[in-house]
Length: 297
Image 1 (cartoon, rainbow, N blue to C red):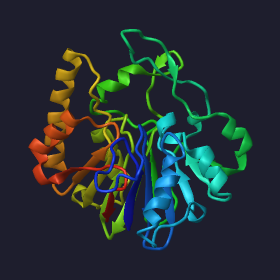
Image 2: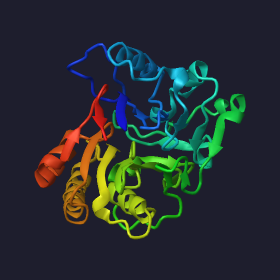
Image 3: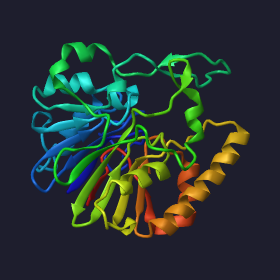
Image 4: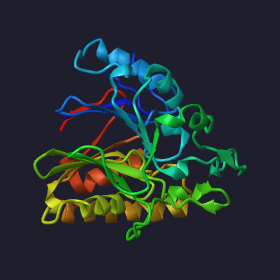
């Protein structure tokens, strides 16, 4: 299997033609010849990047050849390119949590010392225009023998969630992120990768949830990759930043002990400070991605 980051917050210094934006889109190519798109970034730029990458890698699919889309959660920096995708692909189904069908996601992150609600949900008109394309996932669902969408709804949160969630609301209440899903991939016998584009539920909660869904008798040592954003951000106040730094140290230590063979590969909503802390604990088991990053699983 091979994974490609089609668009991310960070530019690619080795390929400046690739665009970047505050958003994330990941393409997964399976050994069986299937192509899965996980999130669509904030716009259609991920499709333009795909065409640039195809110029030098003929194994990559065109937009029309993508078999399915998996939406990780209801925010527009992960769903904003969906309309462009529908225009380029007439058949691929889109898997998402039913709660995403609702104009109720807001950010109250202060800007210029002013705090006001800003809608950050998915374009709701798509549900009427392309109703036949959506498949609701409120419980974990195996798409293939080796690929499972892991639903976080109803999973008890045993570890702290990122403090950056404090600015994110579902209607008038803090978002519980029951609409978040992750993707669990068995890329070799009892060898697993987890893709979690934003990890609002917290990396440790998502890891533990995914391992819980593995076949009985499978060891947590089979978890080899955690790939995605961690939502440890750089716009917290001083006190919250200190609290979160301590949480990150604790999370990295937990991973080091419980998941001894896991490599964390992060980007998107993961600030530089977070990477420095995790790297100081996990050393070579931490890396970052950018637009155009690829990894062979």
